Amino acid sequence: MAQELSFRPATSEIPREPGVYRFLDDQGRVLYVGKAKNLRARLSNYFGPLNSLHERTRRMVLSASDVKWTIVGTEFEALQLEFTWIKEFQPPFNVRFRDDKSYPYLAISMGDKVPRAFITRNRDLKGVKYFGPYTQSWAIRDTLDSLLRVFPVRSCSGSIFQTAKRTGRPCLLADLGKCSAPCVSRVSDSDHKSIAKSLGDFIGSGSDSHVSEIRQKMAVASSDQNFELAARYRDDINALERVLEKSTIVLDDQVDADLIGLARDELTAAVSIFMVRGGRIRGNRALVVDLELDRSNGELLEYLLQDIYSKSGAAEAQDIPKEIYLTEMPADKAAVEAWLTQTRTKSCSLFAPKRGDKAALLDTASQNASHALQNYKLKRVSDFSARAGALAGLQEVLNMDTAPLRIECFDISHLSGTNTVGSMVVFEDGLPRKDQYRKFNLETADDTESVYQTLMRRLKYLNEGNTHHERFSYRPGLLVIDGGQPQLNAAVRAMNDSGVSGITVISLAKRLEEVFVSGIDYPLILPRTSEELFLLQRIRDEAHRFAITAQRKSRSKTIGSLLLEIPGLGEQRARLLLRKFGSLKRIRLASVEEISQLAGFGEKLAKTVVEHLKD
Image 1 (cartoon, helix red, strand yellow):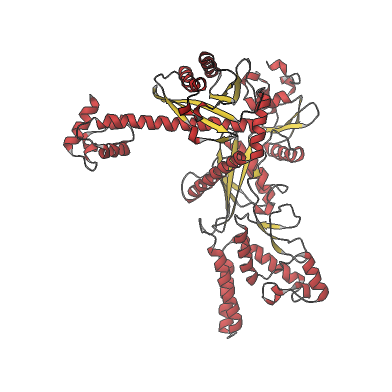
Image 2: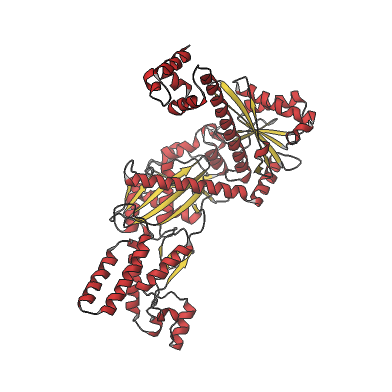
């Protein structure tokens, strides 16, 4: 099938040097930009048999009509050129992280002649130094209010500043001691800029060094019997200490680092970034990305580092810390470190800790990433317009007469051929109807036969119209089966044998997220980021979760019943055994001594348990 790609270059034409390549469509639009240590080896992976490619990679090369490459001297140059072109062309198949929400930042306009401190969510202002992001706007406003007592930087808008300058009358903040009033020249512009720089240094470092300096000044003022000045220094110390108390000390006070946790599934990834300065968490943020192509964790983290630490990206170059801790190392660690060091103009190192305080904090960042991933999916599900678009899209791609307002999905779960359970979940208008979920206990362990039996038992209610099962007799618009072509064939056979018609039946194969439709030889490939595919995946995953839960409950009941047959063993002691050993197999392997150590078990009862389970 490789000959279908008419633009495929001859292998001998592709150089073996490092470089950057671009896939383009027939309009000349750049679809994908990538880098390679060896261009020939890398590009050859795209031009193998199409059926050997990952589904999303196959979709990309089939969308392209040309490929171009540029040779560079080193891997480091390839990294730089790749990121430059990604920023320039915004290719649809490249990784593009985005914030899962808008965060407030504390900003200081150091590029102005008279700098201003303010709170903003806009990260694109020129000449502005940003600190954060912070999770709550009220918290950073309260922090800034406390800091202005110590670092009286201008915080008014440009119009208020110009009015005060024109009239020679400062605003109320100057009278409160929260502004040094450069508008009326109470301080010179250069002195005011120095105050603004001190404010930035304190926020950026988050250390106690500023407090120590002011405490020394307070001691000198007190020894000189300048008690009014000493009292002012005392109030400054209290204000700074209140600010520092709001930042939890998590690492050594010499640590300036970012810790990046990652959570992902087949289709979406999320990262959570903890910014630690002076051993304190100074801010955190989360970003999410839909995965257009199959990516390893190392590749994802490499693209993330490029995105958040580039001068044109979401963070300024000065925000790069000297250490970055990751759950996994990027593929080209040396090149990424060199790029970060060049951008920062100081050394920057990457680490992947496996134990210790940093590893524990990295685990917390990963938990936050998992939470961000879950929230992102919930937002998509709760979006009415997205759900309506998904249902309308399914109607179109499946060639249905009406949108499938009621969708039922079926999955099968068993444990080594035993305790087979079929699950049925119901979604109406794109939302789960848990009161209408059903489970089916089955006698067979064969997947296709289990699908057939489950569908036969469900479909009979559509023919009978049993009023005792009114909700169960609702007619679905779409039936979804978890599986591939064999499972779909079993479902269609059940439809034919039950005499039910007029319902669209599909199956969703998890490996490549292919949609099999009866009567069509080839599976449908829905766009990777489409709401239609997202809805089908959510329904399929919910059916799988419900099936697993039902199967575990069934298995637990079976084990419990077997244990209760043992003479002298009641429900409480049976639960103790299960809690201690976890499974019937582990209980069978336990010795008399191990069992007799449990509360309520003597040697005699322990021997009875061992002998009974060996029979």
